[in-house]
Image 1: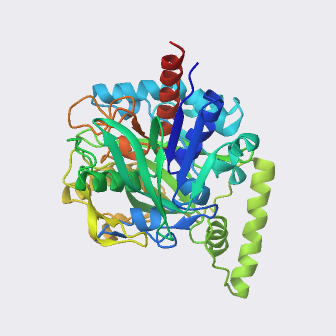
Image 2 (image 1 turned 30 degrees about the horizontal axis):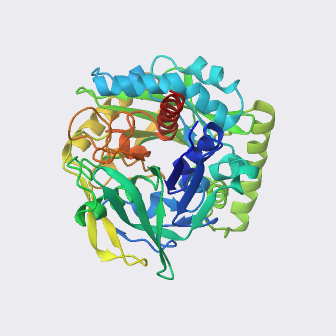
Image 3 (image 1 turned 135 degrees about the vertical axis):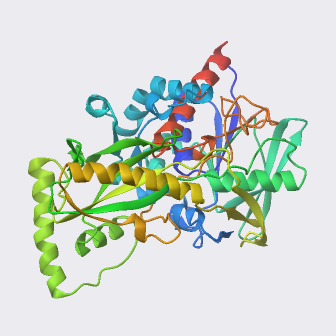
Length: 476
């Protein structure tokens, strides 16, 4: 079997997963990895990148660079698309869902090394209830899961930026990289993977198009969407449950198994309701900040005493009850709902350069009046449910300025490097970028919407489908 030289551009969440699986699937192939960051997890500003947006924080607050990428900082909740995410029976979504169903077992095994998790998820995955599972704290950096022996055989270049792509007709022959010292180098390969994150991958392709290096005519950069995340209700003095579903996450072998309720608007938009717990307890907020790399440790004696009592309850519930402790005095219902596709939002190159001397990115995104209308529709639905269940609650959404505000660290940018079968799709259904015969892309931007999930696991399924096809082609 002939060997190939493969180049991964960006070794964050998806690049790391792809690297591990390429090593396992093609052990004799030569692999070179190009990463903007290094072994540290760096925010956009720490990495010296630049973005601008009037409304969206997805670039500044939602992405991290370095080996392992964003999941190394935030962790990652693994869920998958299914038929409930396709209420309008769109044929492209039917294919995406089929890929998720076919490969989700393999993805779960690769991430957790444990088949017992899947029956636990599927047991609760019915009706309007969908379950997910968080990566373990010590497993969230996927680069660290790459085989240590094989790491020594990888050509790993950190602190470098792709500044040019060199095509011969539709084949990408090489990329040019530059480091912080402005030293340039040409990297050649047979197959290239653009896994630099949704926003940065799009920025690279927009820059190549502006320079005439890429002549594709797809809708790249158009139809930027995201989940609208809104706190709908605060509920007091009640066990965190609704419609007979206990929303408290379960503790399973070091991971939290979460629950969410799927919701639909009258025009077929998909979203989900989930519980948010312990926001009013300072020690819990501080604990989360420390876990996710932030530093905030100041608190007074009263908060210390209250916090110690809470930590004892938290430890008891995790160790004995095998579930997260959720203070029943107050908890919230949060709505995450998709935006319409197609839409007028887009990504463009900024007129401001970053520290590498290349253009930054501009996000033209906002919450639209119709978004508020559909949030209100779901809010009314659940207000009636809360009244029927005689729960004590207060409304939150009506106090939100402009109708929709990100209240949690929830950023799922989608739509602007969309996969599909039409001529305007940026990639085909095998994630190959149109106009480039040997360039593949993997990120959340492949999906026109995030529907009811955090799309990380769904992208891993696309990687598995690509690898299976590549193996078949290589052995044919």
